[in-house]
Image (cartoon, rainbow, N blue to C red):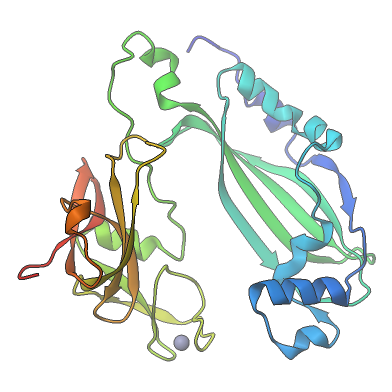
Length: 306
Ligand SMILES: [Zn+2]
């Protein structure tokens, strides 16, 4: 590497330190803000008209305009050495929230953010870089922690910008971005890798759901298993993307929303179906295609006999 200094060293030295000054909520937990939030997402639980705030509302109380915030900019000075060393890209990769209890009317929230972890340099689909985890802790005036949020970013050097790749710019075209795999959807991508289309099933009420998630929207059960889909369905809706062209996709790019015969819906690209041939209601079938060595994705093809 041209730059022998470790760009992550200043960040590592800052682990455990606050990233920016504590933020105190402008208002205590109050019913008008709870009402607005519940209306916006369709939450009708009467508990939230009776003195409690939804736990998932936690970051709302201390939320501010994103930029410019001089205190934040100063706190993020740990990122400058990455930029100076060519790791100019930044991508948000994970957001985890942990709720310890619901807030009650009148409580006031303070949010503190500390740098929790800096990874070693990792190779990713975007390029080589470092993962930084920022831990946000939410407290009430007694000092009790009521929730946490972990926000992880990747500071990366884009693949085609890597110093070693510069002499031969005409190198490999950019690859497809890998899907973000988490505990909820890992089964789906492991299934695709093995050539099987799996769908999540609530074991409480039997409802199929997709995209995968931790809780059944019908019965709120957290218990689930998976079933293998036939892959057959009919075209419910579609769009054809023309712009902006993003490598490695080919345009025009049909993106299909398909009613699967088991009663769930899946979004995927069409494979070898041109726009004029697309008709709402047409029968389709999933084909799992190896788009790059070792990387498979589901596509829709015309169903046999369709
Ligand atoms: Zn259910």
